Image (cartoon, rainbow, N blue to C red; front, side, top):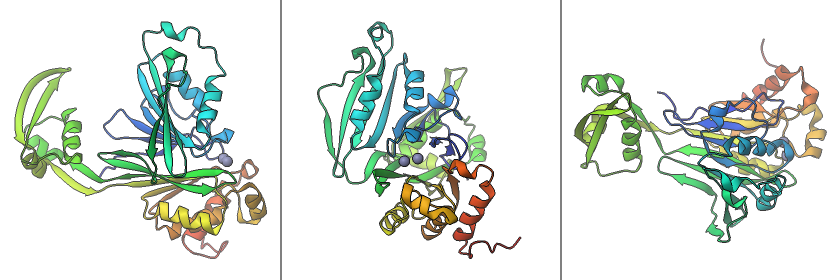
Length: 343
Ligand SMILES: [Zn+2]
Ligand SMILES: [Zn+2]
């Protein structure tokens, strides 16, 4: 089975963090955090539709300019979410540049910025041609922990403590649709963009008795159309399995309250991306800076029952000690006493 999301960190574990989540077969991606984006090509970045910023410490927000620079002059809409005070932060960045020429652009970029408050979200729209002045009508919605709901997945957040509120983030796919290539061939159907429409119809739970039109294209030109009953076609070519869950947790203090909330958010994730800023021997420094140790990261991954985890956001003091960090987290994940790994 091929998963729909292929998450990867935007760079090495010592650099300013971010998680890039592209979708299989779609020119689309999400970003958790806006650290240093140099690990992403412009093509990767242009797929991003929604960005979720955990908190606005510089190492998690410096990539905003990189993304904006690339999107500028394109017909695009970019949605950016962040915690309380986010409008001020975004508007501060936008105010740092001169926008006297943008009204002459042929294209238009729309920024939709959502500030997340404990009980509600506020969304403001900024249009490039208006020199990114905020539109007057601000949209207010109730916030219950879900930041984005689409037919096939949802993005949830949990408030964690990093001396400032910091968001833990999870993306959960409702279910996964796998296409059986052999059955496709037997039906004489080519792989093509119609498959995205087909999956969309299933995610949206369209009436299985309804018609579904398969349009075959060659070099972008429609060559043939064939009509199927949606449910019958699904029975022949699709297998439905449980969806993936990916969780991203960074910049949190190792307190019992944070642990409880982070474990709840990360519960049964297929892949947990978790900070491991310090080694256990430097736990006093970790406490002071409101970060996790590798041991705590491993414990958290074990208690949440995740299938796989990736550590990141290492303190530069461990430049040549990646193995020690991995070892310590691995011991905690396996519930072995630290330093007693069989070699
Ligand atoms: Zn921070
Ligand atoms: Zn940080």
